[in-house]
Image (cartoon, rainbow, N blue to C red; front, side, top):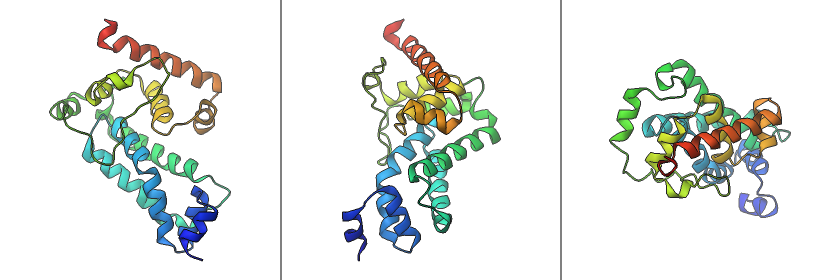
Length: 204
C-alpha cells in the first residue's frame, strides 16, 4: 500500500509519523507541510523577528524529528512532541543568550536589527498571527507593530500568547503543556491581553 492509499484511510499526524519512521519519506513531507508555518511563526515571534535565528531554530527542530523518528510511539501525540521540541529549543536559546531578553525586552541590538526590516514582507513560510475574538485587533497591526508589542510582555505572558496563537493551543492544553494550573493560564492570558491593548497606539 502506498503512502497516498494509507493517508486516504488515516492521514492523522501520528499515522504519518509512523509511516515515516517505517521508512516512507512521504510521511515526513506531509507533516512538514502541515506544521512548518506554525513552527516557524513560533520562532519568528519568539525571537523578536530575527529571521536568520528563527530559521536556524526551525531547522534544528525538524532535524530532531528526523533523528528521533525510530523512537516515535503512537502513544504520543505528534503535535505534543513537536511543540515540546520547539518550546525547549527556543527557551534553551533564550537562557543561553540572555541578551535576547531582559525583563521581557529584546536587547537594543536585536531591536535595531529588526527596525531596518520593519516594512519587509514576512518570509514565504511564515503565516502572520491572525487570532479572532480575543479583544486585541492583531489584523490592524503591521508585523513590526505586533513584534514590538509582544516584546512589552514579560516572558511568562509572552509564552502563553505564543503557545495560544502560534500553536493554537486551548487553555487546558497550555496548562498541561507547562504543567501549571488552568487558573494560572487564564490569569496570565488576561493580563497579557490587557497589556497588549494598553500598548496599542489608539489606546493612548
